[in-house]
Each structure stands twice: as structure tokens, then as C-alpha cells.
Image 1: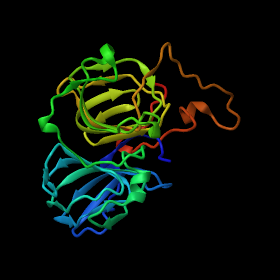
Image 2 (image 1 turned 180 degrees about the vertical axis):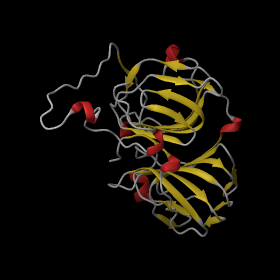
Image 3 (image 1 turned 30 degrees about the horizontal axis):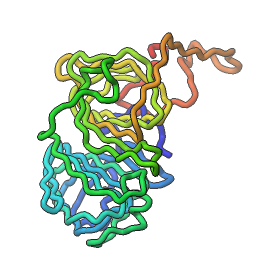
Length: 301
């Protein structure tokens, strides 16, 4: 399973050789979140030199969001703000990536494995397909510049000013309990706020592309990332007054808000062999956090 990351600034993370199996070129990645049990990961990849790979299929369900640069996927040309998704086992065309290209790359249900082929591989499709279902998946390509911002369909009137662009939605089916993966581009306009404490039955991860947003765990600015497992309580939120906040969101199911009111956090006990006045706040289970996001301010949360 993936660790609870709340939150990291990608610039704090070390570079690794990019996990782009059987490709020709040079690229590096920062691991935002990594599942050591099955190889699923969320990474930021920069291509220092032009990179290419022949047609074939991934061993995982894979999503790319282009932050900067150019990616050619067969006849498709993806530039800043473009997105594609390929389910495991689905044969995709030749890829060519220009030097200097910067992408977010997400994997589910598998590692970096890739096999050359022009045919789909059924054993992967039966596991992946539309991620959680057993139906054969399709290649999804989206140019977000051609999309209009739509109202937040998940929140109703309480968050009517939050805007979304849908990248991918896993079609509901009995195989995935009518709840599949969802990937979104989200924009909170300047001054948008939500003072509720919420938690969800699904995981929630996000990478900040532009702007800033203050919430109870810190300030999300460009390059900030979090991966929050299901049932972790969080909130409030307030978007910056200049540009608001824009980021990529991913969920492994329908976003349902379970709301807590009159919330309070109490951690009490008697110190046995330490001085609590000099140690500061102590709490078990603090999630992963990187250095420039600052120390935990548990008294202020």
C-alpha cells in the first residue's frame, strides 16, 4: 500500500533514473508516492534528452499529464495541459518525447514493465482494463485547453464555485462495485474557501500546478503533492487571492464527503520519562512530509 503523504514539495525529493522500460533517450524522475507492494506510483518525470519507444503495452494502468513540452503518441500530439491514459495490456503506438518535456506519470496495479507488441495482451486487460473492471479499456487522450471548466459535480451547491475538467472516469460496472478511478483537473478561483472538516471512502491525491491554497496541513503551492488514503480527515481550505489554485486530482472511486462538525482533537496523558514542555507536540502516525513544507504545527491545527 502507499504511505500517507501529507504533504511534500517535489523540489525536496531526489532524482532517480526514470522507470521508462525499453525506451531510448535520457529521463529522470522524482517519486511523489510509491507502492512497494505492487509497483504503483505517482512520479514527476523530466526528459533531459529526446526519448522514444516502439509500440507496445504497459504492465500497469498508466496516465501521463504534460506539464511542459511535447509528447507524440502515434497520430496524437500532446502539449502543455494534455493527458493520456492507457490501461494495462492495451497496445499503444510509438511514443516520441521532446527534450525538456516535463510530465506527471501515474501507475496503478503494476510496475514499470513494458512489452513490445502491436496486439493487446488479454491477461493484463482482464486485470486492468478500465482499471478496476474486467471490461477491455481504451486509449484516452484529452487536450484540456479545448475543454470548458464545468461545475463541481461532486459537491452540489456547497462548493458551486469550484471548477473541474474531467480527464478520465472509470465506467461504473458490477466488476468494480460501480465505483472506478477518476482523474480531474481542478481550479479553485481566487478567495474560494471551505471551512468544513471532511473525509472520504476513497483515496485522494493531488499535485499543485499553479497558485496556492492554505489548509490545515500547510500551504499548497506549485510543486506541492499529497496522497491521502481513504478516511483521513482534513480541511479547511482557502485558495490564494491572486490566481486561486489549480491542480491535478486523482481518486480511486466516487468522491463522497463525510462531514464532521464541532470537531476537536484531544491527546492527553501523563509524561513518564520526558518533559513535555521541552519536547513540543507529540502524536503517533504523522504522515510523510518534506522539509520545505515546514515543521508540523500540531497546536495550530
